[in-house]
Length: 380
Image (cartoon, rainbow, N blue to C red; front, top):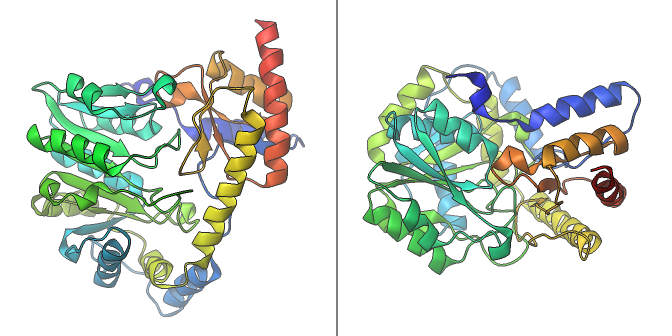
């Protein structure tokens, strides 16, 4: 497989932004998908104490039992379902669990349906697993809704798996229980594996998260993916997990054993504290994101077309020009970093703005962005 077929990375823009900063320029970062908050002190302290106690060696490749039991408790508290710790696998970041899920279910040539626009690694991971990516096109005209009828039209005898992601990256849209149930029922009827990426499940601005995990009839097909990166501002800690069908546990553990061995030992201890410790920091962070979302929406309203996000910390406006060229122009000329919509699929005239930054930087960044759009259009 040629590496140029593996798509884009958000780190391409980050690298260029860092180069500008080394030149002494101040860059406003509205592109990277991580909270701008510090990891809570109780979590940091738990990792430090684990290291001090000598918990720095290999662990069970599936994850330490204490953490898997804690994750099982978390599912009952936040998703309303009990699960055996034996179905839980702890990984170095949720991204690895997405890849593992595809590697154990996909045969060469199998078709995998995924949202477009969607998280850029889905397309890459499908290719790495030997599958054929089949984009499920979402449109701004329909509010980026995931319509069951459209899904039905994409299913063929070669369809092997379906990737879902709510709240959705890059649009921030969510889904109601009835629509999600209809989608799950379609997948179950056709025997299609469901890979449900719910990494933003706690970052909601209204209502409650609807998880694919609540539909018990899908247990033999469902891979639930979650982690600690977004909820607890732990992106650099690299800790995630999957809840998967029993028959795949051994295969995924074998993959992990022969690739990364295990998730970092003392980080697993910190993850226990993240779940069991105070949740005030999560509430504070989500409150800040909600406020910032309101700020971005108010600044873009009437100037660019967009769908108001209900979760995560992104907004995906239509700029009406080639997004990749514009993103580089915006960074070079205005020192504002955003991600091109083309990184997320065929939505080439959109950009993704992350509002995981301060109110001050958001105000300045969006003001520069709006000026840049008008100037860029005038240059064409």
